[in-house]
Image (tube, rainbow, N blue to C red; front, top):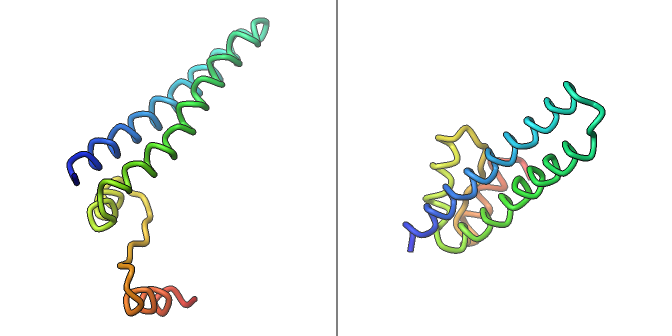
Length: 100
């Protein structure tokens, strides 16, 4: 089950970086040739859709992989995560450390 979550998480990051790359390609193309704006707009929208899809796929990954697997993976990918257990003691400890 955790393996499925990790695979889905990796797929999410592939979608994110693929979408960002397509968006950058469209923007750079628009800088060079401004006469064909609609051509680059469609490519940019496709990249935006891929980038947005990342968030939904990432949520799906969280259903399969527990946060104690996702948080260290996020740390290795230089993402900021707050992970806590769902028992009241862990939640209070997290709130205390965050100053909430």
